[in-house]
Amino acid sequence: MSSYTLRSIVSASAAALLIGCASAEHHEQAPEPMSVTGTAGTALTATPLETFESAWAMTFLPDGRSLVSEKDGNLWLLGADGKKLGEIANVPSVTARGQGGLGDIIVHPDFTDNNTVFLSYVERDAEDDNLSGAAVERATLSLKAEGGTLENREVIWRQSPKVTGNGHYGHRLAIAQDGHLFIASGERQKFTPAQNMAMNLGKVVRINQDGAIPEDNPFYGNGAMADQIWTLGHRNPLGIAFDGEQRLWVVEMGPKGGDELNLIVRSENYGYPEVSEGDHYSGKPIPTHESNPIFEDPAIAWIPAISPAGLVFYDGDMFADWKGNAFIGGLSSQALIRVSFETQPTDNLGQPPKDGQTEPVAKEAERFEWGKRIREVEQGPDGALYVLEDKEGGRLIRLTPAE
Image (cartoon, rainbow, N blue to C red; front, side, top):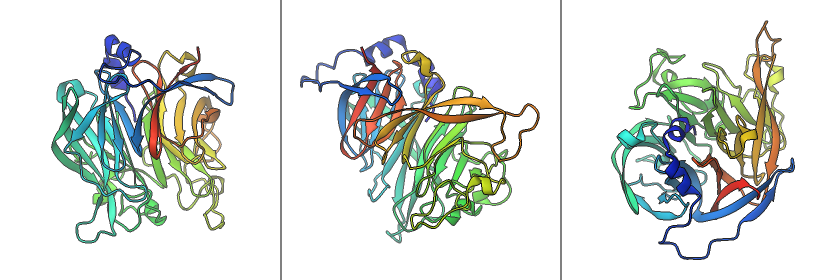
């Protein structure tokens, strides 16, 4: 989730609050910070701030406070110290099953003026409870000192069709600098929808903020679902973010191995399930990207899997040497993964590069582990990294350089 505009409007006073004392409402003894050393030898201080029940997403507000969603349907307002202030009311009602429930939450780049937020969640079919799909709403967030309310809620997008099962919803959100909303839509563990242009499953979708479809989308004019599609051939994209050059990236779970970080290029096909760097869980092999150069290659793939969740590109001063690096949460890998980039002469379609053609090539630079599944990672306005642990009792952790 990109927060390029938000960081630019957060005041110095709000940033200072983030590293200040806990509010007077919280008198309990603060948890002891942990020391975490990465695989490249970088030492960090990890400070637990709060606990949640199956936290899923986090976003910062311009005043230094933040919002955290839980899969079971709670949306929390946190103070600048990372402590819960209260719940947000009138959140979409969800029935959490499998990987589905309340999902992503992002704020509009002009939130200070319009109080607009976008959130995703999983809804059941009204006539058949076995069927479900992700939905995205736009709403106005009315804040109080200890919570708030969502008002003027409006569904602006739905996965189509709703299908059986409770996995691979994706439904991560990002707003481009030009205002378009991008939605990472999973293929729902059904394989073939990722290549089916009559479905918006297994796609990266681009819409206007009111749900209307931009007429300059690459497949516009080919049907209601095709009109939405920006790229296709994705499996389960659980992280989406813009980098400092406003290029869009998605991190997605592969099958048995082959998790991918992909640079999202308009109209390209990323190959699933025709190609993958992993294999089916049954052991049946899947052809690699190299075997069929019509499909876009990942910038990096992981074997064994890291089970990625959450993605942010760092641009702060606290870790100045990491500017431009990506950070990815790892579920099965129980790690926070730092990725660095180099621009090299290459063609990610597997062809020899044309004269002057270059592509960003990624590599894993470092891995930080403390025995917990990582669901989400965000950069705070103070430049620290904020990480949400998965599952019941998962903590919000603030990562800073070791003193």
